[in-house]
Image: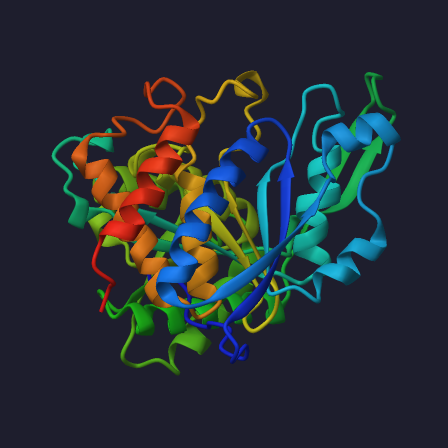
Length: 369
């Protein structure tokens, strides 16, 4: 995949400790298939791993009233990676468990990069007319610890005619700069178009000029990388009309959240989209981004492809690039073959069947160079 410019190569023994949060809804089901593929690839590529499962999620909260203890965040710092299924349950206040666990891990471990590869593996999966696989291959770098998601603000006089809701967006020079630097390093490593596009809305939100100025200052240190700029509304239009224009794009937390879900649709749907929550050189978290989909829980119909892609991203980050590429290749082969005709719960392929297909094919393909 070559999606991350900074792998963790400090572990000379090639033995990894992975914290696993199955979470809610379809989370445990798709995580099971991701771990199945991890189990298949590890002996082929000569590394070992051990997993530690954590029970925290909505079920735990409903049973005990406990979200996630502070001590768990300290424990996670001792792992090489965190693998997360999905969090969320309609029986619980919207966002309560997600903020505690997902945002908690992101903020407390300072996982300042949300990395979202957007790549089309089979043309029949793309809803756009006349677009080829080569037209849709980009990576979005989303700043992951600032912006409006810092939850600074509140509500006054709730449920009255005078109700007031305030939310403040915070951007720092440090936050902007390290995300932008990551994007330029990534463009250099990918060696595709060698282009970074900044996506902001500085024409209407003048405080976002901090992004524009930082982008130009950092970009001047990368004369081999082309710089482009697009406002978020225009970027969304170009994602549909001309996705081939994008190589690496960098943007803030909220805009990144929105535009990468648009990207998921043009690559085939939420059932293939994975993300990395990354702090280079430290423990980082990898997850499918499709949510917990509670209506499909325990039905064995959810696509595990995104969860499997998250394993590929995790291995790439850990420095196991050959293993990551082997998984990606196996997954791409299966999708192009039509054995998994779609990436939703109506594909006709059971969750465990899809996992078996990819795990089996991982052992059949030639090791990537």
